Length: 219
Image 1 (cartoon, helix red, strand yellow):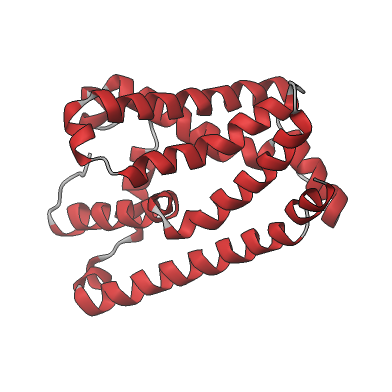
Image 2: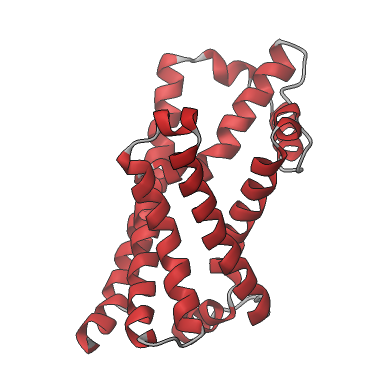
């Protein structure tokens, strides 16, 4: 167990970080080159003004027609994604670990807030899991990989909650927390989780097309 802890807190961290960074840069560069080859006009009408206008509009809850038509999904999606991104970056335990390792620190969330946001992510995963099972049109489009991704996202938060509250076996849960977090980071560029990084570009693309070409709004 001690050897596994050393691996999870040592070499595996670097493998996850380097794999994440290289994967992100590689996939974004590949998509940029592919877009230039297959749809070169996209660079001609791409507009930072219309791209930012669209991005800013779509990060406001209920600002689009689609969001207003599906209020439950809108609330769950916003809370889930905000908690999913903010909690790992600003959890006090993570900030302290980074400070001890590399002498770099930043503001962190109060522990009760991080705890609540962790629960919100877990509940969000349960919501998306049940939706894929119960809702017919979503179930039809679901693949086994979609269920694996939900488990992949939920694992670091379940084990983190377990470790923070020091439930039975929390030492093992702590190691699983590190391993599952590193696995999720490593998988981000190579799975459908990549949409989190790609979203600003697809939104900017749509915003530019609607604003610069169609002279209309995309929300």
